[in-house]
Image 1 (tube, rainbow, N blue to C red):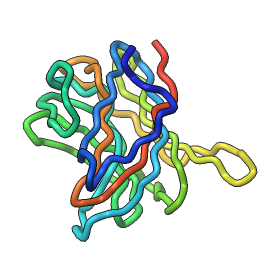
Image 2: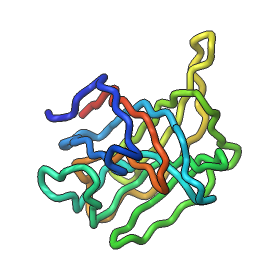
Image 3: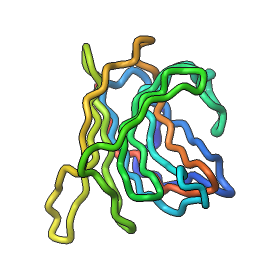
Image 4: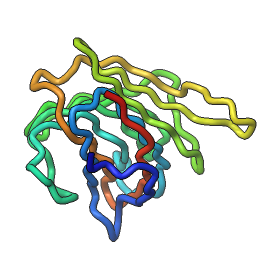
Length: 169
């Protein structure tokens, strides 16, 4: 496995805008993320795309994939959205009702690939150590199949901190 667990990094200005994490054929991915700064665009966002296909073999960071993925996006206005990337720059996204992120909080973002769907979840831990679900969505799994990468990304000059935590088969 080439995914480095518990190794923190920042994605954004001065670093690649997209950073790939090889997930091989695992069906569950858990990544800690901390939305950071955002550029001036009202559509500035950052997040994690899961089960990316169409990623060049041994893709260097910041090379876009051409296939499909499902993920969670944090917008500058504090909305948390699900997002489906369907290839060639096409995407569908929508705000998860009632889901907003807070500055300075590290979120655990999860994705589970099943026979029919991709389950997405966003969790946070409060100051007493209690874990709470902040957002969840069920998306139809990519028609192209399960890709072998996750991509942590930031747009419009923003940053996001990330730390891969766990995988399971």
